[in-house]
Every structure is written in C-alpha cells, then in structure tokens.
Length: 254
Image 1: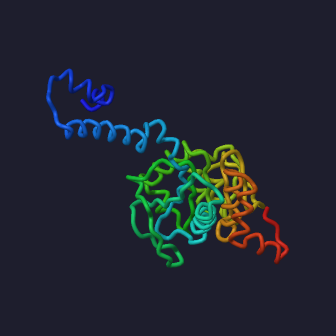
Image 2 (image 1 turned 90 degrees about the horizontal axis):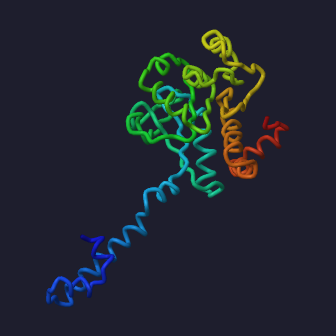
C-alpha cells in the first residue's frame, strides 16, 4: 500500500476513495511517502550499499601465537587506516572462537570474531607459534583459512604461518620463505612449495611471506605497498618510525 500511495498524489487518492478525510489523514499519507523515500536514500539499494563495504584485512589469532607476527600487521594497517593514509579498509582479528587470546609472550589480545561468524576476507594474514601442531590439527580452523585464502585478493604469513598456508595447497609452485630453520619441515611436507632460504620477505603472485618476529613489520609494509601503492606504504612506515630505524642503523628494507 505504501508504494502505491507514493505514486499517487494524496488528493487524487482521497478523491477516488470518496472519503472525506481530515488534514490529519492528508499528513499521514505524506508522512508515509516521506518515510519510504528516506529509507531508499539513507538505506540505499542493496547493490549500492555493497559499494560501501570496506575491504577486510583479517589477522588470524590462536593461543600461543607469537606476538610480533600479529601485532606488526595490526599496527601497520591500523596506523594506515586510523591516520587516513588509506580509505575503504578495516582490519579485524579472528580466532577459533571470539574473545581473548594469549600470545606466547603473555600478551592478551581480543579476537573480534570466531571462525563461525567471521565475515569474508579480502586479505588474510597468518602468524605462528612454536608448536604448530594444534593449529594444523584444528580442522575447523584450517577449513576456514583454506576457504578464505582461496578467495582472498592477498594472503600472507609470518614465520611458520607458512605451514598453515602451505596446507591449503595455495603455496604450490609459489616462492615463499619461513623462519630460518623451518625450511626443512616445509620442504619435506610440501615439496611443491618453492622456498627462498636467504630471503627475509618474499612476494610472489598474491602471496607475501616472511621470517616472522620483527621482520613481520617489513612484511606488513610490503603487503601494504602491494595493496595500495608505495606512497601510502612509505607514509605508514614513516609514521611508525620504521624508515627512521632503517636509516639510523644503515639497514635496507628489502
């Protein structure tokens, strides 16, 4: 009825109905029309609303995760988003279950979502822990990562997080790195993965992998550069004093 009222002038509707209404009825019909138009303008058409959906960067958490593996991308992308260096992105944390997660170093982090209610991701980042067996043996967690990584624009890992991505099959034929010493396990269990032993950060196709630990900061900046461009990634690096650190110690971000 509302849509029909909105396509018919109130006076013509009242005349055709033969009702002798008050001005109050007139106002009620106009209010219904206005409410409907407001809903269309504010709420938007579903197809238009999708254009405003942010690109989601998901950092995977689990108990015992190494702090820097996940804090580095959270800080780099968080700074870029909050300082409006990049727009249209959000970064979220996901664990087997929503709630608190304790890192290996004892830091407590909050997982925004569990794997059961997490939204689809455009970028997925996986960290590591010293004993990866509980992660690799968690079928629900691995199924989630496999599904999200397969449809993501970019996938990334730090340290032995490469073991998780390798288990999805998405690293077959891809050049990657992992933590120094972890190459042997990775090659024995996933022989189709190409390992660059000497590299700290490797970018191949839509995959970014790193040694982990503090190198995770370099990996996050490299990932940011590949997603949005060198100018924005450089600004983020400058903001967290990463560039200053490299310059003062004669290091190179490569």
